[in-house]
Length: 362
Image (cartoon, rainbow, N blue to C red; front, top):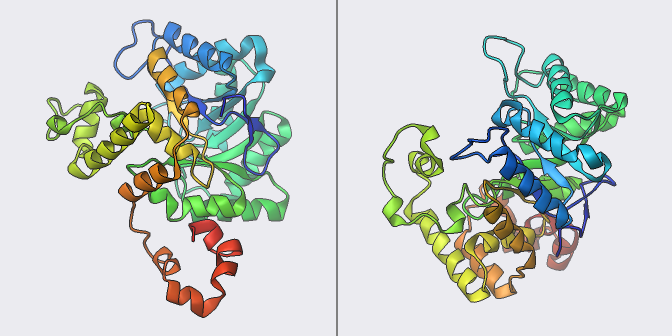
């Protein structure tokens, strides 16, 4: 697999790279440190990704409060048509203004106009609703997004951090009215947290919606950089102290997750790859064909992540990783694993070929 082995994005004709470059760390600050990359480092990563054939860049208005969009805009300016640029709206950019956040029409319009200026372009390829806020009526959201598509300021729309039932409701409403529908879904999805497989992933497979996992390396946990010595309370209670402190505060560095990292590291050693590459390769080989969004702070990290495209896990390795990271399916999914119930409903082979087996596996 290569970055220029493009895939169709959901039920659209838009062709994108199998790995998207996330720009959350990109900054215009030359003294950026910790979580962010400097302007020079950000541009170097964009150039490296593009030279390797990548065309899919994911940013948001809130990333470093607009600095990320500015860096991306500077990079794409010389060859705008080559790149598929995705940005997001919803999160508040200004304190003290009641309408400066949310899914509603006013915030959408003002957020997109501001993003267009920072990106230095007259259209956004893919506009993400960053998170569903459960206040704005779904009719207002979908009609407002469709208006921007009709105006040519947005080409496609997608939903991030939104329940499966709400995405389905929104797309059904859009199709009934002839409005633009969501073609992609963004969610946290990796071997540490596979809960998206309960509802979101089956919904996407059924509706032909692209799956874009964010934080596919679980904030660096799956790279193997943290050990059991890092368990316990952080030295600082400030989330800005660093990613490690954030993981410690959230309790993510625990026995269960480190046991998963041990399996990933063992598979990586036998494959001649790094743990991070194995974690990304596992995602790329899932039946839902996810397109991971990789974020990096240095060119070295980005190069390592892109190396996952050259890693092909064997059936045995996939099975080992899948078993080690298995989650409880929850109701009603646990019923689908009941073979006796399946046999009472329909022939087993027919079930696997066309029914829930196509979504949830045999």
